[in-house]
Length: 210
Image (cartoon, one colour):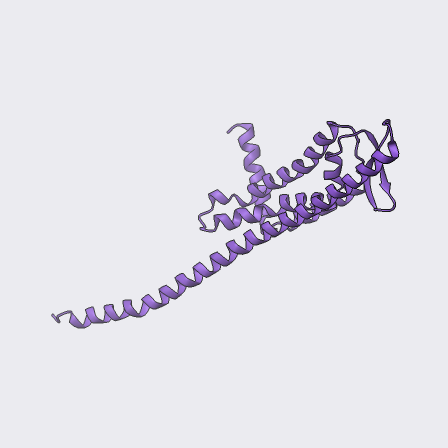
């Protein structure tokens, strides 16, 4: 067995031991990580670099959480018919991470800042933004860019709520569909049992004696 295969098998065994805890550890870790980032985050306020930085921040931890959850759950290896439900549950940690960043608003506003400036806190609106520097009519231009940052922050938070709603509706739909389907199958099985017993009794009665 090659070294990558051994590493994958060992990782799968270690993660399998904690699979019963579900998504709780990753939820706590991601919330703590986002809290620390929110305290230390500072936008470079440099066009081009902003997009790259925010893309890595948004996708990096989300992909890592998804990879670990797929190792833990292995939905395609399970014999269960609830593969869709299991896969949706694996999406909870990465979706939570994206929700936290989108709802914060400052990260998307930083990524969409196409001007150079200093990253400061606006005391009136209580939002962090890239205050423009080195341009003419700084006051007028700064007011326009501040309002633009405010709009981006608003739509970022709105998209976070939309993402949360879609995820919740998808999981609820999968769970309700599974439960209703299982209940229907159980009811059909109960209806078939008396019929099977009656047919067996009839066959025994009709069997000729030796």
